[in-house]
Image (cartoon, rainbow, N blue to C red; front, side, top):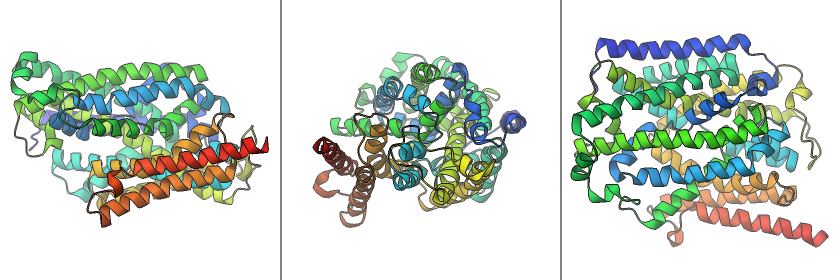
Length: 480
């Protein structure tokens, strides 16, 4: 049970007010043109790029606490190291290429490389991949824990605080609130670590109180389990938030350097969250709900003011990701799906890419469709959150079925030597998605949780997509 003093409540309310102030202030500098509303005029400098990218990657903070509580430093190995690797790979292979296209979204790239049909299917998969449902659920549950509100009220507050200013301020509002939340998320965990050390002691306390496996790389899990997380980390390569920020950077160099610097900050934040998780497990060994590891630790050792600051840090961590996912989902649903369905496609394979959708419809059209998408995306995400009230289950389901569809065609689209004909790209995308989805459904409904041949759903989908890609490359070779 969370207990807040009046001063802690005041600090949390001040945080919400600060987010609204920064978000709405940004609207004064936001135009209605496509480039300004969707990408802040492609003006992100290196410091701003780093702060917005770092802060958007940690929304699942309660899940991080649960994983650390259950498996110790293995959390760092399976949910940190794979993402560092693929982020670095992204920086060196894709960042400059993405910025050099001067496009706006992943579906724009798919249409430029292949055709409109592939772009629309990619838009649908991107929309599902970026649903803010897990974070809407997480923030609403957290507000329930903090204030004792019912779920409906929590969802309403989430909508107002996390989404309303995006409607008017677009991507610039997302970025400027991210800067504030970057500072607060680090400050929150920087508060609790010294209190842990002073209250319990250093490594000797942890070593004496933790299960032995908590200080091993696997945490007692199998090597196969650890390897699966490396495949899940492929998410990084198709993450629309990464692509969006590269499109919005002032230059390709800013995008590349920004990602590499971000890895350092992710490493530091992982160190703090992993340390807090270890202290929670050592100090409160019989916690009934491991997802509550961080709040339970805060209730155990933090005095007023420090407790309020820590909870603000947790809220900022969730909110920064929720903002980004809400805006990307809105852009994908409104602009890339609804608007694109009414736009005549440019010729497939045009190296200059399709003209901005704005050029077809006139000033402000894509902005208005994105605003409409924001409302619809939030409503759909609430439905998903209520239907699947498990954050981890939502993550697993979405990553397992969407990544096999998007990964191969999208990566190939950026390299002439890997690109395939449009019909093969569409088939690879559809097969990767549908086969993994079917595999998952079979295991859930027919196999009682056991998948065919004991194989995780992601693998057959990826294999099918790669096989079709190989056939596409072979068809090009056959034509000479």
